[in-house]
Image (cartoon, rainbow over all chains, first blue to last red; front, side):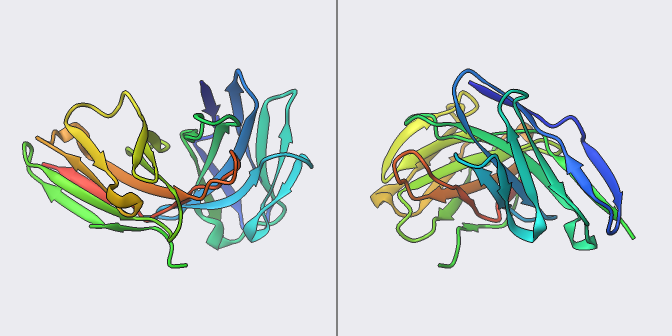
Length: 115
Length: 115
């Protein structure tokens, strides 16, 4: 079984400032990691994913995340945020093996950009 | 590629009524997932299909819930004798399996309100 912790439920950031959204996970098996974004009244859109290889993963809209196996973390970063980044961000994990495909999500971080 | 679609987008019903939601996956995606998202929480896994076979059901899926995917195309999720606790956003996702590496693409969701 896996679990995901997003410690920050809300993060306010000034426009053009950098941001980091934290994600820690727990799993007894190796995992794939994902960040999804949810705009108001919409479904989830994939931002980026880590499957294997380089631990620094680049995604859409200028976001990137770094996988740290020793710290079981997958923090999301953006060097300069824009008003349009205001949304809810979810970190998710799934196991590698067949039969372990369902995603386990964190409770989300609401990112608010202050003009 | 038109994306995952869900209908209806919103549903208001009275306690005790039955409701049915439909999900149309991305064409040729062989896997289809249902998740439920309550206010302030991340999505929680309900069930998933590979083609027409239902491979896993969460303990969250009580006997009042049933899902089908006839012919391995669209899927329906029915809730019988709805309760106020069923009020949530119901999300559908689809994916194409290449080994165990896959990305789930989400629809816009169906928001259910049980009065």
